[in-house]
Image (tube, rainbow, N blue to C red; front, side, top):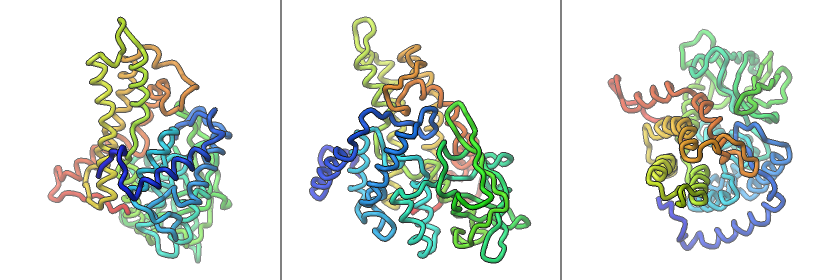
Length: 400
């Protein structure tokens, strides 16, 4: 796949002009806004309202999930069209997966893979058109990264599942419309064969959401107290939740891929071009150039995984390899940024988007080690996908 956008294929040229003009019109009014990161200490309601509105406009055109069929809320376009949307949106500091805070980028492909046709037609359009916000609700206070040790129970009672339990470290400061969650449907069943996956309306009686104030921003604890969830919200069938979870986690652990540039790298390069030491710009220092090149390696992992996913060429360890490298890179970036710019890296800059604020990069590095599993989880999956210590090599789960 050619990631060079300097020369579009003929059938894409007019589409890029259309997207560029559309964004120019629909991004008006956002000039003073500075986008927050997914774990944010400075997100505000005005910014969220604008981003949510932008997502709804993109969704109405099918552009939020451009390659999905029309009946599922997409536009039935090609990967080339998606690349145009991603690269044009990036000029405004956003990408399709994070126009507003929702786990739609993961939930939608899992529904495509495991939902019934009836579920896809009912559940997908509101997600892909940004009409609802969905939270991923996996981690439990006593289970940590071992999601198979799920203690939140969902017991069948007639046409409903009665859900009781607790989840932690989810969401952001505004409430969701749906909770996308793993539950135990058979407490006496065999491990990995006793789970189910529910798409739970967040306004059901018995659901309580409680803020957790953390260094990187607000996360939440979610409590389920005899919550009655209609059986139609079970995805993938009863006691088949582990297979659904594997698809979900493959996407969460880097298997989805990205095509855009890393905005932090872009800002570091700009900083090093504008700032001088000893009469020479920092960018001319060979050591600093090596550091920048190392930081940019992550982009290549993302592009490779994107190609493997959409070309339907399985890559058994590509996702978790990217995930592990990303987390270690973000941890090291705190030291790298201070090495390049000294104490400037520790001063908050509210004039830029949070994701490229050097202070936020330094502060958020340690927290990145624990989102969506730990480094030990990554190493274990990587080893199994290589077949280390096992008679057979574990395959990557199917995504979409």
